[in-house]
Length: 234
Image 1 (tube, helix red, strand yellow):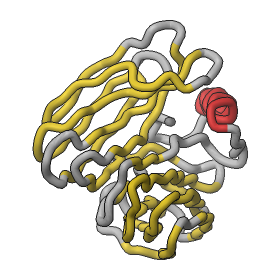
Image 2 (tube, one colour):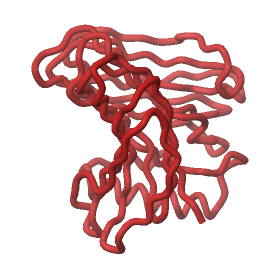
Image 3 (cartoon, helix red, strand yellow):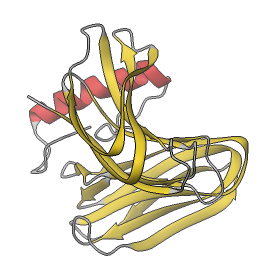
Image 4 (cartoon, helix red, strand yellow):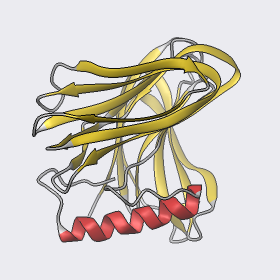
C-alpha cells in the first residue's frame, strides 16, 4: 500500500519493491510492472455480496484482474474524474468461476476502481482481485476499500508493514481485524481484532511479523455496507 498522494517517488519505488518481494513470497505470484497493491479478498460470500478496491489515479489506464472460486460473479471497472466522485462502469464481465484480466485506458487524471459482486454462491464462495494503475504517474491508495457483506461474510484489503492505523465505518457493530505474515512471509492468521460500528486505532506489531492486512468480518445478523482503510504511521 502506498500512502503518498502526491506522486510516485524514488522512496516509493523502494517501498514498492519491498512489498512486491513480500507478495511474491507470500502468494507465489509476481507483478513487477506497476506499483504493488494489496489483494482485495472476499470469503464466505453469498449472493449479493460485493467488495471493491480503493482508487488508483493514472494518466494512462489501469489493469483489474482476479478470480472467484465456487460461485458466479460480475466483475467491473468504474471510473471517475475526481477522487470519490460520480462513477461510470466502463467494463464488466459476468460468469461462473471467472478468471478476469482487463485493461482500461482513459484521459489523464482518471480514477479507477474495481468491484466484484457475487451473483450465485455455494457453501464456500470466495475471491481475490487487484487493481493496478498503469504508468509512472500512478497515485494509488486513494480513498477506502468498501464492501457489502451478508452475515458471516468477510472482506480484506489494505496492507502495510510496521505500525499501522486502522479506520473503518459500518452501520452496526462488526469485527475489524488484522491478518499477518511472519518474517518469512508465511501466513500467520489474525493477530488483532476489535469490534464496533467504527474503528480508529493503531496497531504495533511484534518484530516477528511482516505484512499486515486489514479485514472486516460481518459478525452481525444484518447485511452491512462497510468502508475501511489501513495506513502506515511514522
